[in-house]
Each structure stands twice: as C-alpha cells, then as structure tokens.
Length: 68
Image (cartoon, rainbow, N blue to C red; front, side):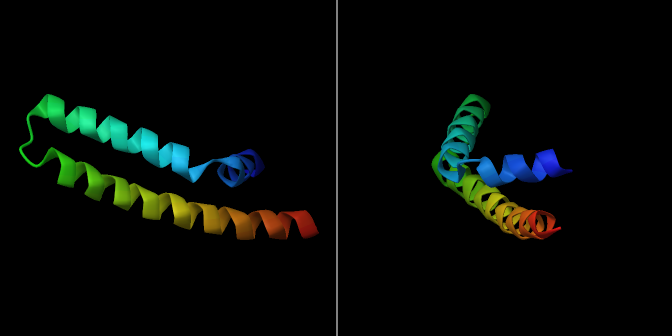
C-alpha cells in the first residue's frame, strides 16, 4: 500500500491528464464520434477530478504514515 501511495504522491497530474486527453481523442476519432472534442474534454475532466482526489487522499495517508 505504501508503494501505491508513494507513486500517487510522485505522479505529475499534468502529464497524466495530457496522456488521458490524447488517448480519448484518438479513441473517439477512431470510433467516429461526431462530438469527439467535447467528449474527450469531459472524459479528461472526470479523470482529472479522480486523480486530484486520489492525490489528496494519498497526501493525507502518506503524512500519517510518515508520523509513525
């Protein structure tokens, strides 16, 4: 569990969001979605919120583990 928390604390959110956005753009273009840009932005925003919450939780968990 410590390695997962350490990984989340070290990860760069901007790089991850860029990768997620590019992956969604390619996916929705390949699928032929008419609103590929809006769909990709919404999916990236959702994953951005999930990653930021995970980073907050990991930061608090990591602080508690560091105190022990």
